[in-house]
Image (cartoon, rainbow, N blue to C red; front, side, top):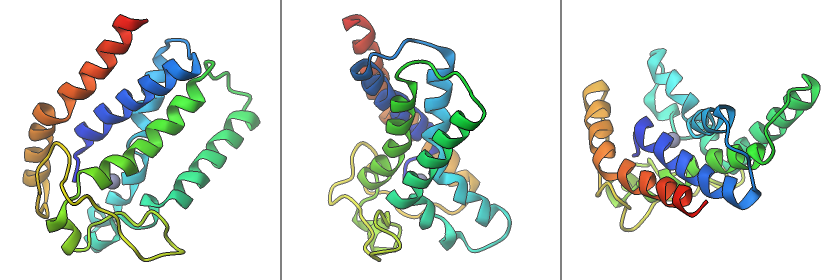
Length: 176
Ligand SMILES: [Zn+2]
């Protein structure tokens, strides 16, 4: 599983690619929004924190249907509240949101897959959970059991996920 550090780094790198493609103008809102959007599917970690089963994590909020609902709700809120969004930012935020699901699939290997931690992209229409045969960047991690494991994964992501993501952002800056 990717940690919050990995998700923010990957989300910002994905948003940087999308922002360039969409011709988005640079702004704090663009990058802050991308960082927030990249973490939205993990809102379900609130369930275990509230003492409910940790098996409630990585279910509905990790589906494409939930992502679509977030996009619709976010777009409606922007229209209703008449919020000024920087040009191209919405595309970058959507890509950052979807990057969460992609990174979770790419960093979930056979070990976590066998334990049922794959990503249910097509929930509620399919029970299939997606994971990678050879996880990207993080190795075939096993289940984390609380805060110490999460902190260790965050340290690992600082070394394994953040540098390539930073390289992508830097490269796009140099090409700008
Ligand atoms: Zn997740």
